[in-house]
Length: 463
Image (cartoon, rainbow, N blue to C red; front, side):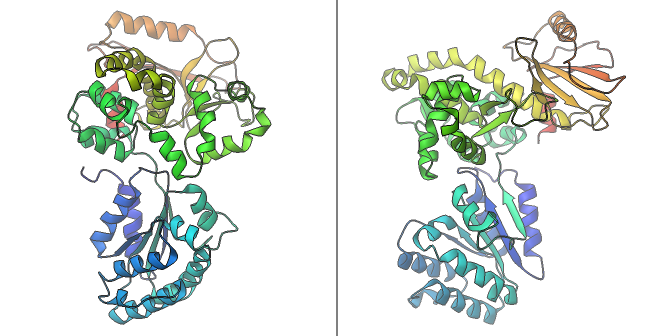
């Protein structure tokens, strides 16, 4: 698959490359996001050294590292290095002699640290002295977020404070999915993103399998031999976090409050609060707090699975895995179709909320949220303008067919009739009402304070 997006990340890396003083970049984030692809593109552009560690012994890791250095310093691997300081010191001297400044990229750094715990301190001394004197450009990368934090990002870590660039890779925006998968229809793009999310590795698997939307999900996920049939377990195992799975199962089964999660997994809330924090750090779940509520410890806080694919897996695949493992493709696909409406509706709502700050509106708006309170009305989308003078109140609806003009008008009236959430707001507050649907009918006649957006509008601002 072609290299997609990552413009801002590449801009930062290129700026470091052009620096006369060199420097250190740290790239991290969950697995499958394309960290390696980003670093390879950068390395090839600037004739760098790229080394990816594995789970070998320290002696073999140093051998593989020296072989990678051979591409710039031929013959470097002909020597056996007894320890990491001797390898790095020799590298610094030889690179200086030929005027090579980098980038030197060490991918999967946690594997080296796991085998050689002293490596973080060794690397810190190298960065502080030889690399600084030579004005080398170095990049460190890893997928184990726990180990990257302990080695680099935590205040107590040896390399803390040394990085010129700290780049946390996040999923790619829905606006790039059409380009990646060669999809033209905006509705098909939203549908695809609702399952695969913004993970390049998943996009690559879909592109290599030339089936329909339903057939691709069945082949890649539902089929027991599918490449992503056991993906969440692999992600958790690779990060040493498989013990977190029961919480994800509970959320997938509809438990979103801590008390509900505790009831599902049969534990007291206090016994898994640290596990919740770990899932937040891994970007696997996120907190949801009603609009206008500032207390992050509010009892109204909900927890939901953040990534579309992981959410799909725990809400649809995990509860029915026994059925999917025995059923024919025909029966699997029929069961899948029955589950899709809810998944598409949730993802569409999330995508719409994310788009609010970028939509062409008369005011600049901040981040959007939901609002709920007890058994009262719920609002899908509420955002406040930067000057706090205007609220956008919106409703998202995922409908299979283009709705009629009359349906649109009726739905907007229903939204207005809900009123306004009873929370603190400025006097003379202006209200913009917004309806989000997959495809809007033509020739809508709307007052200035009413907007209707569809998938095309959203994709135009998300790329």
